[in-house]
Image 1 (cartoon, one colour):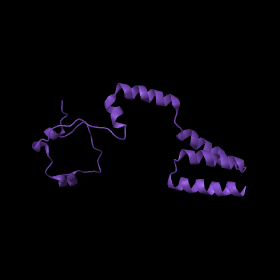
Image 2 (tube, rainbow, N blue to C red):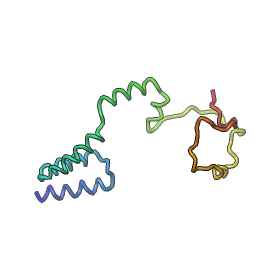
Image 3 (cartoon, helix red, strand yellow):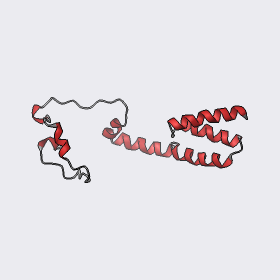
Image 4 (tube, helix red, strand yellow):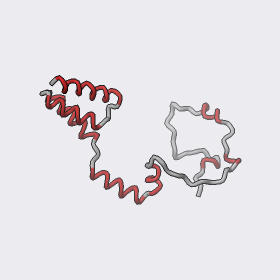
Amino acid sequence: DEQLEIAKGYYERVLQIDPEDLSSIYNLMLLNQKLGDRKTAAELAVVFRDLKDDPQVSSLASTFLQGNSDVGNESLPFHAHELALFDPASEVKDYLSILNIDWTNKFDFNTLPTDSRFQKKQ
């Protein structure tokens, strides 16, 4: 039991750093069960089930990402964007203008300014 308590302490320390570390949650759940703390083990099982990947969702996501390559590319850690020639006219000259935005109101993305820099390129 002494080694189980030591291991439990290590897993708890890992979870202080990363509360969503799935392997630590799982192992801590097993340790609590072995140590007789079934209530904590059951609570950790709920957290584990909540964080664990659902295989059905993965296949749905895969199908969606295959049909929407732009979204799929953005989900990859390393990806390339289409390069365009630099247009000096589109350069933002006054970055401090962001200070004039009233951040207390919700920004409505459907009503972007008519400035050509904000228009979607075809």
